[in-house]
Amino acid sequence: MSEFLAFIIEDDYDLSNIFEKALQAAEFETQVFRRGDTAYEALSTVSPDVVVLDLHLPFVEGIEILERIRTAAHLKKTRIIIVSADDRLAETLREKADLVLIKPVEFGQLRGLSARLRHAGYQNA
Image (cartoon, rainbow, N blue to C red; front, side, top):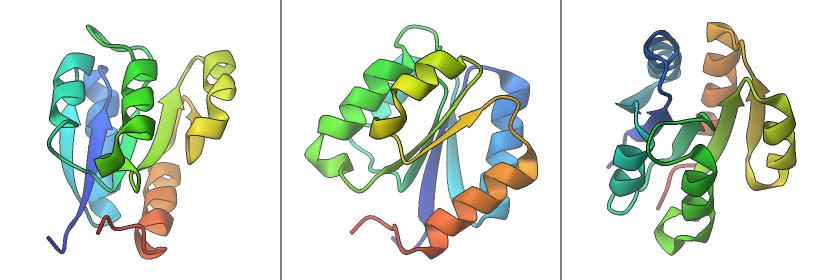
């Protein structure tokens, strides 16, 4: 697949739409998940290039999703952008993420950072 794929895992409807548009502007194909359990399940079969991850999600918390990505062999090249209003928790996870952004996150900020990841050659093999 020549497209870059991004998962947006965010339960806030408005934010997930903004994140989706920002990633599409950075030339990513996108899939949006508003529940942690559905994202967790999808990650068992799909290897996105980038995951934009909220930490507080219904049914499965973002920390569990982060751990899955960091321990699954097929996800070892997946880049993680944590986007959270919980700055203390996000800071404790900084070493496990490629980027940590504290909400509110601007459209242009996410688009620019995502585009840099894409153009840096982080496509999964």
